[in-house]
Each structure stands twice: as C-alpha cells, then as structure tokens.
Amino acid sequence: MAVMSRRVAGFGTTIFADINALAAKHGAVNLGQGAPDFDGPPEVLAAAVTAVNSALNQYAPGIGMAPVRQAIAHHAQRFYNQQLNPDTDVLVTSGATEGMFAAILGLTDAGDEVIVFEPVYDTYVPNMIMGGVIPRYVALRGDDWSVDGDELAQAFTARTKAIVINTPHNPTGKVFSRDELRMIAELCLKHNVVAITDEVYEHILYDDASHVRLATLPGMADRTLTISSLGKTFSVTGWKIGWAMGPAPLVHAVNQAHQFITFAVSSPLQAAAVTALNLPFGFFGELQSSYQARRDRMLGVLQKAGFKVFKPQGSYFIMIDWRGVAPSWVKDDMEFARWLIREIGVAGIPASPFYQEADRQMGRYFTRFAVCKKDETLDAATERFAKLGKT
Ligand code: PMP
Ligand code: GLN
Image 1 (cartoon, rainbow, N blue to C red):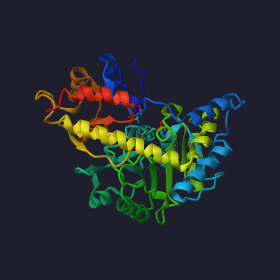
Image 2 (image 1 turned 30 degrees about the horizontal axis):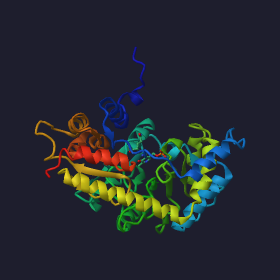
Image 3 (image 1 turned 30 degrees about the vertical axis):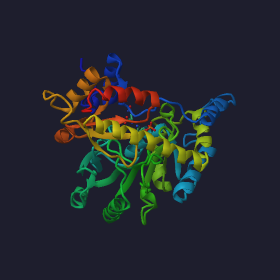
Image 4 (image 1 turned 180 degrees about the vertical axis):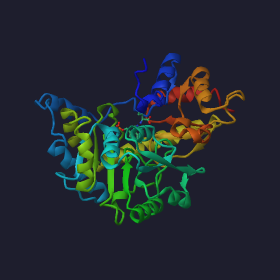
C-alpha cells in the first residue's frame, strides 16, 4: 500500500539527519549540523527554569505572550531602529522554521512563484511544495556568492508573489550588502512583491560586516516580513522559539496559518526570550568576538589542510572546495562527506542538497563546516584535519 502522499514523496531525509547518523556511527568530530555543542547564557537558562516554576506552563496566546512580543519589538528598535507595534506587528512562532512555513502558507497561493537564492536553506522549497507554490531560483555566483542583477530581474514574473532572502546566509556565510538589498527592494517595489527575510544569524558577523535589515530600506517596511529566532544568537537551538514581524496585514496573514499549525508556542521558553533579547549590548559584542575567534581559527586549519575556503562574512559556517584534498576516486560532495567521516574522522555537510536537482552539480565540490563548537571539539577537529595537511 502506498501510504505516502504525493506532496511529500519527493522529499528525502534531511541531510542533517543523514550526516549526524554517519558521524555517530564512525565516531567523527561533528562539524555538520549547525547547532552549538555548548549552552546558552546562564541567565537565559535560569529564566526558563523560573518560568516553569512560576506556573507558566499552560497555553500561551497564539500570537505570543505580550512581554515577549514587547521584547521582540524592543530588540528591533534597539538594533535597527525598526518601529513595530508589539500588539499587531509581531508573532511568536515555533522557531524560524515554523515562521517561514506559516509565512509561505499565509502569504502565497498555489501556483504563485516565490524567488529563492541558491544554494538555498533546505526547508524553504519543501515548504513551498507543500503549499503548491513554484520556486524560482537565482544562483549566488563566484567566490563571493554575488547576485547577478540581470538574472535576478528576470526571475520576477507576473506570477511572483514573494522573494525569500536569508542573510547572513546558510550555507555560504554571505552577508547581503546594502547595494544588493537595495536592488532587491527596487524589484519588489516595481513588481509589487513581498519580501520574506530569514535573519537567524543577524548577530553572527565577521570583520567589518554589518547586517542590514531589508525592512528598514525605503519603501520596504510595508512589504517585508522579517523572521528570526533565539536559537543561534543565544545558543539554544533546541528551544525552537522564533518570530515573524512586519506590517500588521502581513503578520495577520501569517498568523492565519500559524494558528492552525502550532496554535501557540512553548510558554516557559518564550518567557525566557524576554531575558535573552534584553541582554546588554556587551553580550552581543562578546558573541561576535567569540565567533570571530572560532572562524579565524578554523579558516586557518582548513587552509592548512589544503582546502580552498570561502571566507564567510557571517553565520557560523565555512564553505570549502575539497578538490585537491580528497583522493582522486572521490567524485562528488556526498562521497567526500562519507570519505571524510570514515578516513579522517570529521563530519561536514555536503552542499549539493542546498541546490535544486537541475543545479546539483553547482554544489558538487563544496562542503560546509560549522564552527559553533567548544574549543575541545575544534581542537579534536584540528588534530584530525592535520592528517590532511601538507606540512
Ligand atoms: N533558517 C536558517 C537559515 C537556519 O540556518 C536555521 C537553523 N540552522 C533555521 C532557519 C532554523 O531556525 P529555528 O531553529 O529557529 O527554527
Ligand atoms: N539549520 C541547521 C543547519 O543548517 C540545522 C537545522 C536542521 O537540522 N534542520 O545546520
């Protein structure tokens, strides 16, 4: 009996699950899935415990608890001077992942087109397929993953309903420049298209990179839905507390879907978001410097191992090109990932699953490593990568 719906039959297992299983089987140092192996700030963890012990254990309001929505709006004002009404412009979701799914379902119809940049974070397109929406791909090209203005302009058609922008970008570490975002904004305005941004890495930036919030560019406040979450900034990826924010009509549309996906989000964990989002600026500065040190260190290690590295401007990932390091029988990123786990004892994420079927070869020589790990883990990875080094 064929039990699986046609809607999901084409989905494989997520690459993160596959690599985690293989890494565990071979005892590899896991630089695959983007999840810290250290805990979040103690005061944030304590706030969750306090909430559990303060009878905050029943359903929260569907749109999120009022103090949490206020803290989200305040954070947006504090960092981006973005003005949001916490009562109408903010929705608490089960992580950025549910925020994106609810956004796709709430803002698009079957047959609409939505533009995504490729490589593309792995949940967006399945979200679209479940909604009958047609993805249109625009490739990030070259060593700096740049956007070709003509290619982007051509992706906009009469059926384009929305564009999804992930900055800082997973898996490349690209941070969209103000000029690129201006170009996107102009096209959104010209074609009356909504922008949905995924900014979960907004606070993980390197060197002199700065995060520009598309919603704050001229004309975009009315047509941008910004999605973010606690997971990356506060090293609590397992909490799955996220939010979608923007003009009331967009947020209301997203909530129409959200109310029938999860209805409401974990009360004690969202309560702790108030403490997290209100941490002093010093916390965010320290987060950046600790990631800068990890990135710099691992760039050096990967270069020494002989990889071509793509220097990330943000996120906690480093993409590499493995040609010249792997034995000659290794033909693609999947084989490379398996070989690296088995023979070297380090796990990374092959890049081709971040491309549509027709473009898989674009990711064939790339692998992504996550640097959101304790010093001991990075030490162990360094030791293992040294087996590859030419020194
Ligand atoms: N968007 C991107 C680009 C991500 O990398 C991730 C997780 N690594 C998510 C969304 C998921 O965020 P959350 O855990 O808040 O659902
Ligand atoms: N977003 C994380 C990553 O890119 C993993 C999320 C997941 O496991 N689905 O590694």
